[in-house]
Image (tube, rainbow, N blue to C red; front, side, top):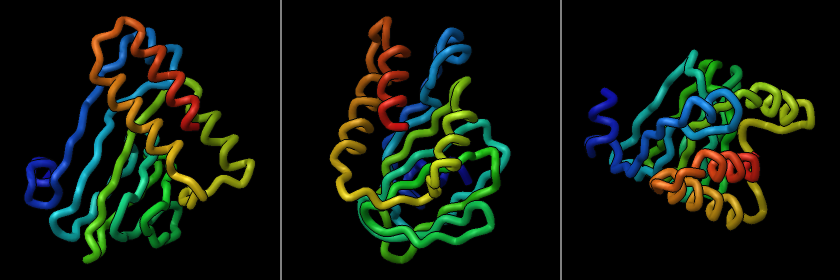
Length: 163
C-alpha cells in the first residue's frame, strides 16, 4: 500500500527522506521526511507508534484527522501538529486535498510538544497568515536537499522557528 500511496495511484507526491547525522540525532531537532502531495483519489493514511512528530498544512481541498479520540475536519489553511507515537489517521475527502508536511524529531521534541499542549495548543490550528509557515517549509525542503556541511544546524534553526 505504501508504494501505491507515493507512486500515483492515490497521490502525486514529491517527498524527501532525510538521514540526519548522529550529532543531529543526539543534539538537535531534525527532519525525517518532508514533502508535498496532491491526492488523486480519496484515501486514508493511518499510523501509530511512529517515533516522529508531524506538522502539515492543508493547501487546498478538505479532509479529516482522527487524533486523541477526536475527529477534526480540515480545510485550506489548517495546520496540524501531532505526536505520531499516538494513534492517528488523516483522510482526504472527495474534495481532494493538497498537503505540505514534515515529519520531525529530536531530543527536545517531547518537551516542546508538552509545552505546546500546556499552553493550550491544539492538534489543528488555523493561523491568520500562512506565509511564514509556507516560507519555513520551502527553506526546510531546500536545505534538506543541499550538500552544505552545516545543513543539520540550519534545519534545526528552521524547525525551531516552526515550533
